[in-house]
Image (cartoon, helix red, strand yellow):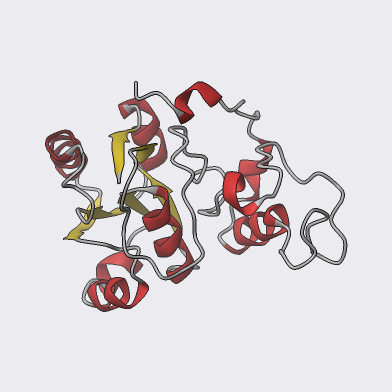
Length: 206
């Protein structure tokens, strides 16, 4: 189970400023906590600016087969957008980013842990529910879970032939992030000052 909380309004508006946006809402785990009223209010504001190409509300976007079927009905509106803004946990954002590999996909929420069941994803994507989502800076690939060392400031330098020095069967998470950012034309994100992770958010809901 999990709790999702909207990122600061200033953060979301800075992501969407001057861009055409397609919005995805996931209500799959909403029985625990999803900021539905806050999300609807913010989305109305974004729509009023005339930059929203469409809004899709579904459940369990962490299930790729279900998600693909739902997204196919909206592909014209998605292709018309510069940015796909996802209101879900980190697993949902990563699933959408993997499928829409030519689009900038951003997280509108941070995720906090609650013990118990979470989602239905059959994939290996993971959300550590750290309460401080980095996916908007790393192309939709989580540096906390994709890197054995959970580095948020780039590659450690110990990888060999694209494999992690801690786990030789694991692809280096930061090499994946670099390739993804290059594919969507966002290598400039690597120039952003490193946001030091606040580990207090791992256990505490703000």
